[in-house]
Image (cartoon, rainbow, N blue to C red; front, side, top):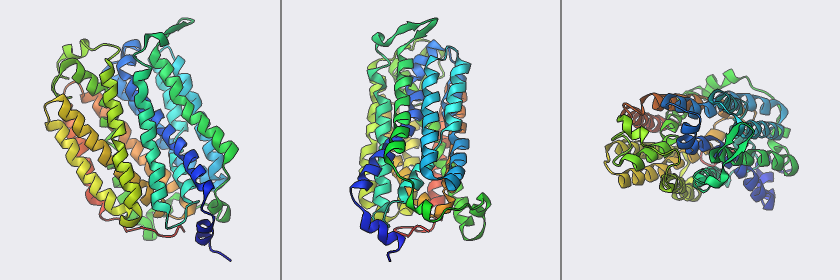
Amino acid sequence: RLTYEEAVEEAFGLFHWLLLAVCGWANASDAVEILCVSFLLPTARCDLQLSSSDMGLLTASIFLMMVGGYMWGYLADQRGRRKVLVVSLTVNGLFGGLASVAPWFWLFLLLRFISGIVGGSIPVIFSYFSEFMPRLRRGAMISALATFWMAGNILAALAWLVIPRTWARFSLGKLDFQSWRLFVVLCSVPSTSSAVLFKLLMPESPKFLMEQGLLPIKQMFSGSVKARSIVLLIIFYCISFYYGLWMWFPELFARVESSGGSPCANVSVPSALNNQSCYPVKTAYMEGFIIAASNLPGNIFTILIMDSTGGKTLLACSLIVSSLSVFLIYVVQTKAQSLGLSCIFSGVSVIAWNALDVVGTELYPTQLSSALGFFTGVGRVAAIMGNVVFGKLVDSSCTVPILLVSALLLVGGLVALLLPQTRQTELT
C-alpha cells in the first residue's frame, strides 16, 4: 500500500494542471475584486462626490474579508474545501456586481462591505490546492498558483480599456450608469465563474476526506506551533499594511499626471486635487498596468527556486528589499523614478507573498486549514488600517504612511528569520 504522499506523486498528471488553472483563476478573482476599487477611484470620486477619507473607507471595505477568511477556513475544516469555495465565491461575485448599480456612496460601501465580509475564501484555495500536491513539487506548484494573483492584477489594470471610454455611459432609470460602473460588473465575473468551475469540475480534497476532523483554533497558540504562530501573525500584519500604499497607486499616479513631481510632492496643495479630471488620461492607468506586469519576474523566480531554496529565505530577503524600495519611493523626485521604484517594489514583494503562501500551508496540519484563514484575517486588519491611514493623510502628509509601510516591511523581514525551514516537508 502507498502512503498518501506516494499516492499523490504517482497520480501527478494532467488533472493537476487543470487544478492549477481552476484554483489559479479563483486566486486571480481575489486580486481583481480587491484591486478594481483602486482603479475606479479617480472616476468614482467625482460621481459619488467622495472625499479622500471616503476613498480610504472604500478601499478598506474589501479587506473585511478578514472575517470571511476565518469563517470559511473554519467551515472548510468541517464541511469540506470544495463546498466552501463554491458558496463563498458565488456570494463574493454577486454582491460585488450589485455594487455597480448603487446610486449612493453609503450603499456602494455597504455592498462592498458584504462582498468582503462574506468572501475571503482565498486561504481555503491554497489549502485545497496544496493537499493535491506531491511533496517534491509542492513549492513550485504553489508558487505557480500564487502567480495567478499577477494575472488578476493585470486584468484589473486593464481598467484603461473601460473607464475612460464615453461609449460605456448610459442612463439606467434615474441612475447615470457611467463606465466605472461597467468596470465593477466586469470585475465580478472571475469570482462567479470560479464558483461554477469548482462546482462542475473539481472533486473534494482527498486529504480532507482521509482526515476529517476539527482542531480548536487555540491549538495554534499552544505546544510546538505557538512560536511559529506568533511569528506568522507579525509577518502577516507587516506585509499586509502595504496594501494602503498599493491601493492608492492609481490615485497617486493620477495626481502626478496632474501636478508633476513625486507622488507626495504636491498632494497637500488643494488645487492639485481640484484640477484633476474625473477621467484621468490613459497613461495614469497604463502605469498601474506596468506595475502589475512587473510581478512577472518575481513570479518566475519563485517558481524556479522555491523548492531548492525554501520559503523562509525568500520571505525574509524579499521583505527587506521591499522595505528599501518603498523608502526610496519617498525619496525620489520625478515621475519616472517613482514608476521605476514602484515596479521594483511590485516585482520583489510578490516573492514574499509567494513564499508566505508556501510556508503557511506547510507549517500546520491539514485539519487546521483555518489557521491560514486566521492569519489572512490579521492581514486584512492591517490592510484596512493601511487604507484608512492613507485616506486620512494622503492630502497632508503622505510621507508618513509611506515610511510606516517601509518600516513594517523591514520588521516583517527580520522576524521571518525566526521561522523554521519547511522546504519539501510532508503534509501532516
